[in-house]
Image (cartoon, rainbow, N blue to C red; front, side, top):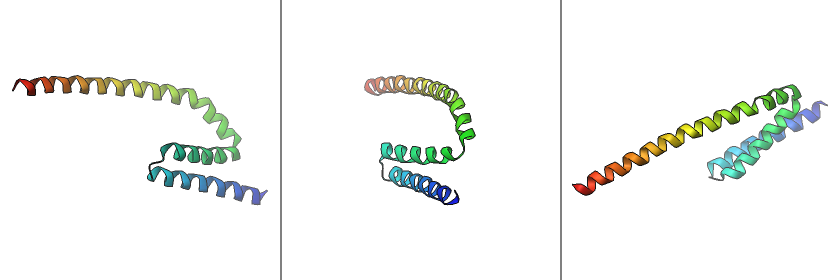
Length: 92
């Protein structure tokens, strides 16, 4: 059993390191996939932690949705202000 845990930890650590390296080289999708694999392996060791995380996923998604909505509002405001500045510059 101990040897199995060592292999799982090595796999998880390798996946997380690979994800970091891929992110640094600009390969975001591959980095997310590798990091997700590492996280899944880590969570597979502790099923209670996985259950708790699964229960919290809807809240994470809602928070992310709200954050994107706020960011969209900020970007709309910046775009509107940019249009006003362009009009002022053209008049001058």
